[in-house]
Length: 151
Ligand code: CA2
Image (cartoon, rainbow, N blue to C red; front, side):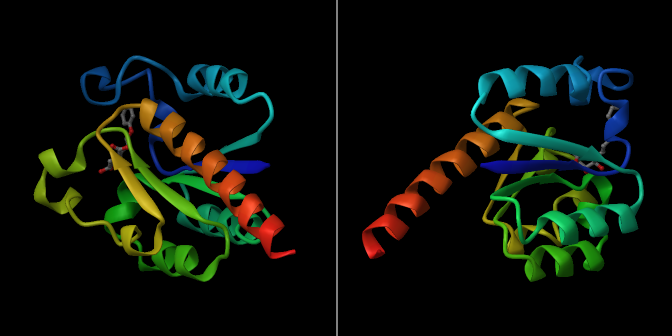
């Protein structure tokens, strides 16, 4: 099973700035623990500050990967292009936000992506990524069982 974790702009700063909002851990450190927690899953991590690079990655993985965990950062609230890409691909996408966007400024309450994602996890810190991976793994097993029965 292949799962992509895709992070958008500024998330490369995790662990270095604003720990009161985004926590004290860098994503790289968190990702090491995540890989250890899911040894049978091939987890890939990609971060970019550029909308086009995120689009390219969605197109590249969105027909082959078994799941995508997407934190598009501020593009969540602005990008019709990312929304179109999430709607166009086949791979299920789970939207994650580290902070509780609904408890923050009104412009963060809207997600252009949410409607095309399978679900959203917000406000649970980095734990949200772990829960999203766990769901995608469970989802994959359920689909395998259903496909097996249909054969
Ligand atoms: O809560 C989230 O995960 C967000 O996607 C983070 C975005 C923000 O624009 C969204 O509204 C909610 C911002 C990412 C900035 O990340 C930083 C991390 C550490 C230090 C500074 C910024």
